[in-house]
Image (cartoon, rainbow, N blue to C red; front, side, top):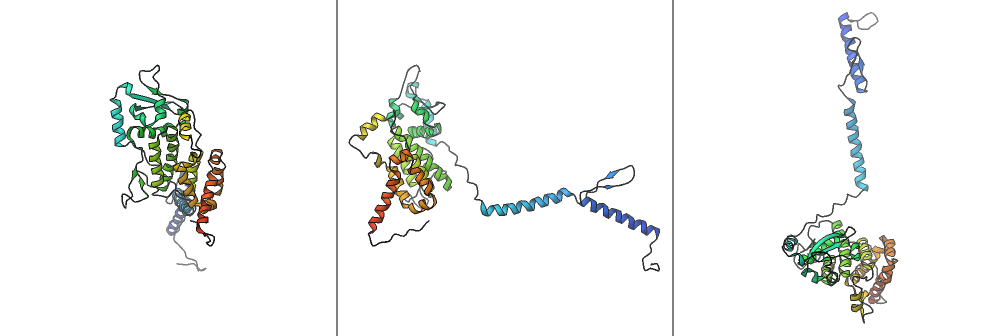
Length: 341
């Protein structure tokens, strides 16, 4: 029905019904905007929440997080994985058990590190280190011990590996064959799976190499040298080699621990320092990556070269001389062109 103006006419009941619909609709709309609808009467405020605002906020946050993640993934490298967990080998566990069965006079406590951490080894095991054996003392204690100011500079974590070698002729991680064969290089390190693990182990091995030299443990030096040079299942790269060179070339001069023995070995050998096998290997390795090193890590190269001990051992000049010798060997009619890796 409609009136004379063309507008529809409703009965009283129809008007009430439509009015209630409009009130309900306005209540829903207010709840979407985070408001509440007040109803007259004693009941007071009645919250309306068919479409709650927190749900919309969660949806918005999710979209924003996804957008942020997509942008970050293209600009950020994934975090490096944690270092491999070190566990004692079965041989080390067995050796420690056997050590406890020996009488006190055949067990020697070695105190190392800033906190004088005590580590026990067998008396016969010290035959592998003439320096440590010469420091044994028995004054005031029921059993022999070794305590020396120089040993306070040796980190206890590193000496754990030294003791492991004294007991078992090995330290973890051990060398593992290449998956393609026993005599194929590079070999692997047990429990190492990522390039970062291999680089960390190379730097740690470099520190063990320096300690072994101070303690005159030549067999340990040979083992460390094999692990560094053969276990490159993931290549170290120029930066890691420069870090390792800083450890090796900046090692301290002979101290009270081995000064006398070093003088005996150096008699008649004026080039004793230049014959260190790990130094020579580092010189050759960095010479082979010379262009990459100078393009990407020139500042680090000159920092190592200008270090006092490294300069005395001619770190930089030896690399440059070796590189020039390679160029000279090509002859005057050859132009050497090297590609950056």
